[in-house]
Length: 556
Image (cartoon, rainbow, N blue to C red; front, side, top):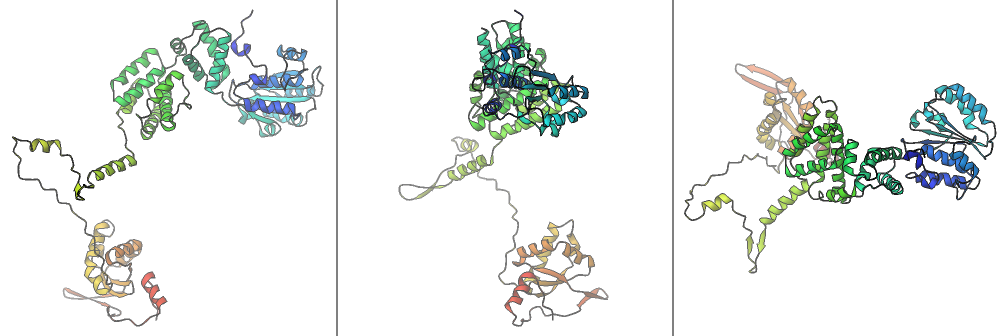
């Protein structure tokens, strides 16, 4: 018999045989059962996940003479003719090679004719996104209102290239990547039927290499069987597919824990001698630390896509890595991955990156630091003994102090004095708030502002003097007209600073000054002379509140 590849030999013939797409097959079976068939379908998704296979099963089910539970019987005349590609009612068209408007015109002419033997004439157009814009436009009317005996099924890997006018006239089904465990179980069933010995580790290697495409996995399976025969081992498969051994990744994670820098050069030499791709190595290392983070966070291995033999090894990392450390490692590896693609010497780049990776120190979280402080406080906390006397726990003496106090050693009586700590003077808030208290502390207020705002205010405000106080409105005098602008610019700062110094928020304003110079003495006179401490007349409480709290001023 002529050899048939696994992807064709084990192609599903019923909806139930399609793996990983149960959400689509169940919908199609219910539509057939309830007679709710659409006139057009579009199947989209990654390569090798069953789009064309599902379209063929749908066409076969619709024309089967003896369907069983919305499944084809695969024994009647119509099923056999469809399986052997001999039916005239099932037309498969390659959209890549029949993409012109002339082919679409021919299709439009053939649509009007009734099926020869079956109930429906089904058109399966693969890679429909390859049709030209003119072809799609010419196909719109026929697609929207086809004859009742015609059904269109489109398959594409790039649905975004199909015009929305076409998609809106079809029922869309999105096929998804097939899970790794599903691919492994399918390949295991095929291997058992073919009497081929294959272990779980090898199945995992093939399934991960296929990246969710069952057809690719079956192609790799054929390639492996051709190389190894009926007894397949993981080491030979890894070499044949040029895959990095997972043991390399575990050696790196162990080296990070043990701070073993020698492992860097051993791993680099192994990768170079085996001809592995350094970019693939870093990709695999990122996936490895991602698996560790998954196990550390979830405390389970269900979300880790790996062989069973490695699941127990990931469990061992639960108490050896923290979430923060893993995030730092993954962030560093992601940056290395981007830089590695443009590096001229990838081997050297990987060695430097792995050295940095192993050299990263373990980080401590805020909760750990707080708990450590709590233990220190607890060590110094008082203890009540049986006699109701309060005693304090004794701190452990340093090793040097124990040595110095041991017999036979002389201890110097002089003790080093602790360095004097410079305490920041915090102004005391006086209970009495009047003009005299402000003038007494005014120079301290100016000096503090000059220190904090040395670059902007500095010595410019030294000549500012208080004149009068009304409520919390303080009038100032100055000979420099620019100082008034500075006070307006930093109005919020001065208000906050006055709150700290004087115990109450003060609003500053300036009075116009007339300077008269007589020899070396300068006499400053104001337009109005106001006695600062004259008793104020009784005022309305609302007016007083506005003046005191909001800095208002009574207009006479």
